[in-house]
Image (tube, rainbow, N blue to C red; front, top):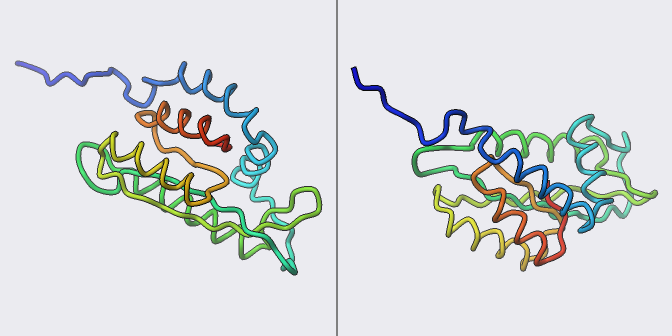
Length: 153
């Protein structure tokens, strides 16, 4: 019997070396933001109280919400939950300054060319940080983050 073969034995691992290399490149481009956001994502750091005169940090992400063969709606739900939870618990405090999260989500329709365009659009519209999806868009995320000197996770 003929078996259908996937182009990659483990699609979720296909860009692991690229991700490690790109992570080293991202940190100089907003390492403080990257570290603060990573901690906030992992352990939910917030000030615990409402901040007066809170600033806004704009976080942009491009996900594949439509199109085939993959769909990353679960990441969008996780990012949305994180942003709402963080804001409800006082935002992110960095060096004594409180920040609220404004999440902007774009759908690339599973089109890599459209993803690149939308990442650039988010950067030009004032995003401070770009959140990635799965492995297929790592190179685009890294190149846009480097070109606009943004932190990327």
